Image: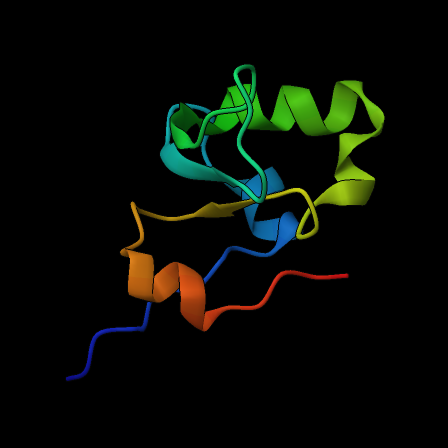
Length: 80
């Protein structure tokens, strides 16, 4: 059996993840205030739902089920 390749999660998958699940949040452009790293699904959902950030999912930030390698990140294009 072959393992599923790592890919960015769809917005619906992020919204449906269990609240305590740890996801990897990646920012397209990191700043002092926006650093990529592990976050709880409930924290990410609050950020998406409580602000207009859901419209920018895939453009400014995206989530992975686990920490991606640099090769994984380069292999998947950002939405424009």
